[in-house]
Length: 312
Image (cartoon, rainbow, N blue to C red; front, top):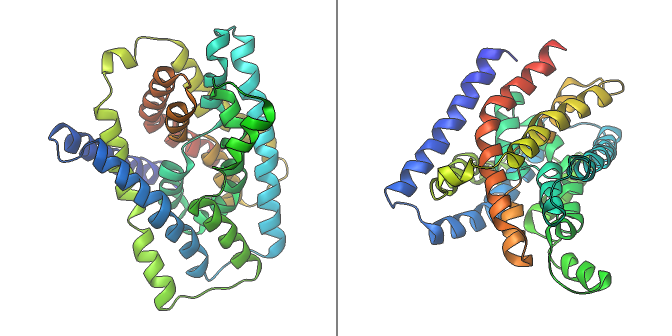
């Protein structure tokens, strides 16, 4: 892995986002199209990509490695959540916005950006690691994440029950399926595996177009007028992955596994935040700013974090 290869991959990702931006400005893409396209990705192409990463992989990790990835993911989120809750409190962010900023620091855009970036840097083998790593994310974002940004009334029990309805998704089921297939060392590089791989390959370019389209409808002046989203973005994109790197490199010897954990920890703000704000009455304006700013900043920080893995 070299700086040139990382840089070229990020340029490719950036060009895809720009094309999505242009498509929105020229009215080729719109809100309705983006919503349906996003649903297609989350429910069809991304699950296919995750499962095909196992079926088409001739060098599956052993059961011990799979279990270790899951445990490392849980440990990393314990660290990330501690940072996410502490930062808005220590920096004295407004109380009514602390939960939103905590969400922004805690949860990255693993599905839309993380998987494509990992595939670009490490190859498809890293997708399996990321799929297992993403299982705790899917559970936490619809439980802890909902509590962070929710402004709805109701008892803790009622809010937990409401959040639990959204945990199960095709992506989460695909992550569990990938983990089970890996544990049983089941591969299938024939017609089934190839078919899922072809469909899954739609995920990266489609995700880039959707991100670009989403950015195109945001008023730029309003997006860059507040300092706090920048602070939260710095923690999300730089402080969190650096902290995870220095903690986990002491006992993770596999470069791809360490790279997957660190890169995944440094993704821009998860798009789930916007959806959850809409559903639970959260601070949509602040969340949108953070998503926009962190996505733009990630074009610089992701290559830098990847280079950190090479030289440190």
